Amino acid sequence: MANTDADADADADADADAGDAADPDADGGGERLLTLVGIGLALALVVGVGIALLAAASGSGGSADVPDATWTLTTVNDTHVRITHTGGQPVAAAELIVTVDGYERKTTWEGEIADGDATVVRARQDQLVRLYWDGGRTDRAQLGRWRVG
Image (cartoon, rainbow, N blue to C red; front, side, top):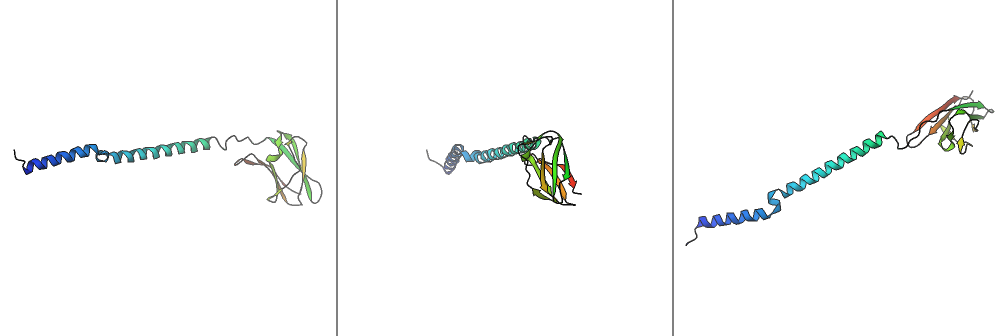
């Protein structure tokens, strides 16, 4: 039996089809890889957004409430004033900040500040004295504001 050109072409096409079936890229392997990468990126994005939403919903993570305390300011002399805790919840000294005209002043407070505890800071006539509570990264509240008079 003689082999014709048509038979040879048919055999070549059959060999090519058999080779395509063995080649994973020929039936969409590349597309599957891209699909898996896309799904992985989408999942990573969803997880990231979920974590960000949880962090935002929980605030600064364990933040405390602003202490409910009363404070007074009295003039000691021409250059100093006294800030006194006059009632309410005790406050940790490390969480208190005193400023005079926007400049932070050191205090003598240590440990827990409770009713009757006081500190003296330098401040003159017409200066603005402020007392802040600083509860962490984003928690800060003004507890008192006085104009020295």
